[in-house]
Length: 194
Image (cartoon, rainbow, N blue to C red; front, side, top):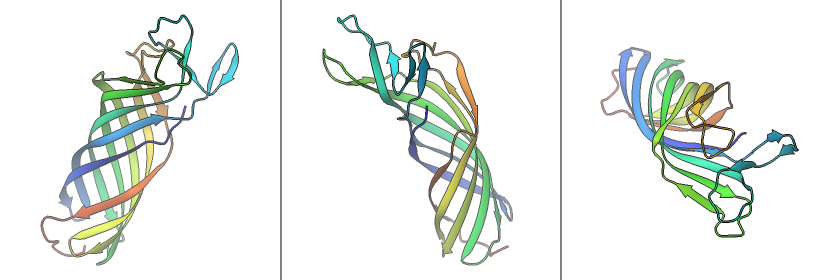
């Protein structure tokens, strides 16, 4: 199961050493599963069975779903090749996810809507990431592309699916790659390039 997920977060940074920065932040993250590859005794499928209450006594399937989450993160960033207008950085951080709403797209529902929404609130899991960024600097503002590799993830199973209990966690190593744009604004003027 894979998906295209996205989010946004805001960090507060504190310089510890000339090239090392600690940061902490909060944000929003939509964890999406839109490429399902499940296997059963009937073979391979691009959908999953879901526990869905209905007066019809049939099986219901989803072909995509997502979790809306609030995130908290903390990490360290190391700057190198630090020049007046450009720098590169490598970072390691941890992201903690707390879901507040879930969405499941039912492939066929003769009794109603295909959109099944739920508002359960619980700790969903965590990611351990490494990042690389290439930043262009002008005054107090820096902007540039950022690449992220989730090295380790642990996510709670979902009891909406009959083969999961909602209590266990699913662990994965190197679960994908991500990209984004990073904007940095310094509240205090820089003391110079080091």
